[in-house]
Amino acid sequence: MTGFWVHGVASSVGERVVARLRAERPDWRFTDGAPPENARYSVLVAGRPDEALLSASPALRTLVVPFAGVPAQTAERLADRPGIAVRTLHHTAGPTAELALGLVLAAARALVPADRAMRGGDWTPRFVPPQPTMVLAGHAATVVGYGEVGRRVARGLAALDMRVNAVRAGARATSGDGVALVHPPRRLPELLRRSRVVVLAVPLSARTGGMIGATELALLPDPAVLVNVARAAVVDEAALYQRLRAGGLAAGLDVWWSEASADGPRTGIAASRFPFHELPNVVLSPHRGGAFSLPEVQRARLTELTRVLDDLSGHDGG
Image 1 (cartoon, rainbow, N blue to C red):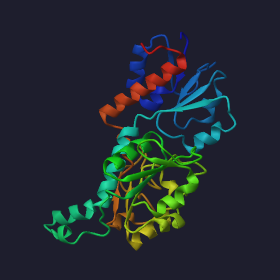
Image 2: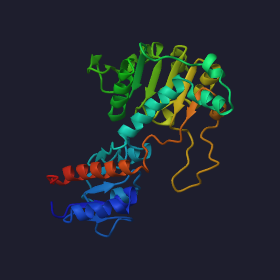
Image 3: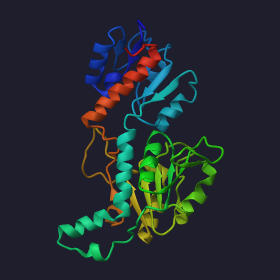
Image 4: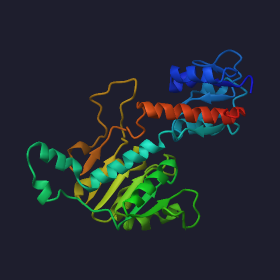
């Protein structure tokens, strides 16, 4: 489509990506930065666009968020703009699912305290397992959020011979898909009571914020593992810390209530107001599920962004 105008690619995903797109789609127009005068872009690529970017172009029809999930601030700004559709990129779904499964295994088998002991020549964890330590095969697992990440996690858990359940927002009744039994959200309390593993992969929204609190954590059996690769605010911070201190629960956390930003300091940033780092039954990960800096992830992002823009422009992708 001649005249197809996209704004914000370089700011959102880098100059190299927009250079590749310009070379591959020379008939498209790309702009960046502050909205140009007389803007007529139909697509805006931005995760957290300000009011100026959303208002400058009367031709704007689609916002492409260059990652999975829509930030709460962005959702609020779009609430009174029903004419703007939203597309998200899921190129990090595979890496995020991989990390989620790694956190499940590390937490379930107490790899962190065992590693620390071995570094000091202490073989005690071989004979006296750190608590909690557990076997997963034959037990139930629940994946909360059954999208691109959740489905991959479910397949991995099934490969470990776990009985996999999933909770999906749009489900109205329980049904199977060959990997998991998919349930509506109202079934979550019942599922928690019998799940040795719970993986959170649900988008953050007004409905999901704080959905795992003291009441839900108390339902988990002893022992159990909770892994969060969604957003920290899905879980009540204080309730999780207290439940972990009480024992019987291990956790793998890749998302935090306070995080370093890409353009700010990278050290001296506390992840929580509670000392999770002092707990031996927690595996800590610095929000790296998407593996954003790895070359294969960058290539996957370019491929998916191109696919989305081709779809929006009517290009045949050839």
